[in-house]
Image (cartoon, rainbow, N blue to C red):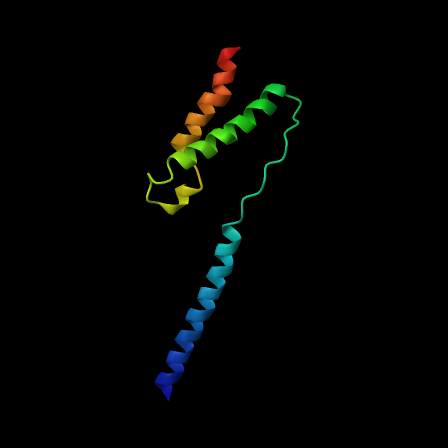
Length: 96
């Protein structure tokens, strides 16, 4: 009878832990939200930020099968962010 109680207690702890962790992971990994139109008063910035995000999306699609980590199938790597930043934001500043 004592072994059954210990087993039942362990199973209860495991079930409770998994339900708590499942709730926490749902909070931590939220859904993507649509971007709102920019109206910062800086016309260059308002023009370049959407181009930056389009570049990021293009880079993610281009490298979808390169990395084994499933996280990077929908999120950019640091190198992709730097590449897009340099080509859009810094590139537009150098043209001036």
